Image 1 (cartoon, each protein chain N blue to C red):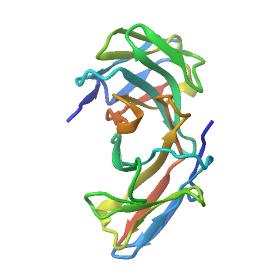
Image 2: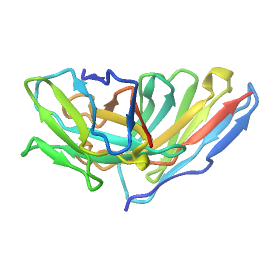
Image 3: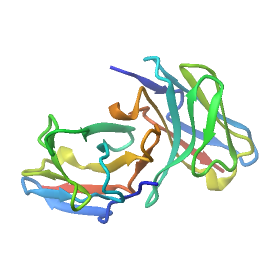
Length: 112
Length: 114
């Protein structure tokens, strides 16, 4: 089975800190995604990447950046964390839309 | 662009009762359709998907969904739910043909009580 691993389950950070969320997949998938999940809003796409060093903005990229230096790793960066970025962050990877996504377990980030 | 509507944010049901979770999507063109399930404090898992062929698809744990092109729906059903089915369920479709992004609905929380 494809495995997508997010490095932290829970994080607490202070306002203004630079935050790194790491995601690693082990099945050579080209496509990787970062979503945030908030009650009543479902999943909203922040950024996605379809190849190494390639990235595209999703629906809510403001306040975030990403890095994909290696195929298996896709990092989400909060340049200066704010309280409105408190959320559940989900990473996913896929070979193709036909197969759907495989998700990590999520990182629940609290910004205080 | 495609969109997905899950009208019910929460569906309470008693154990062993039948349940239907509704999903409608915005386009009538042929699409791929997915249902994901999220158990508490976990990521999403693929429950079932429709790609082509038979309009009725089934999962290994007794859920089924029917693709209805005329009604642009892909409702999820189970004839008899268990406590362990308590979770949030998300319907998803590709954002546009040829793109690798999925668009997710806002989710339906299924609450099964004894």
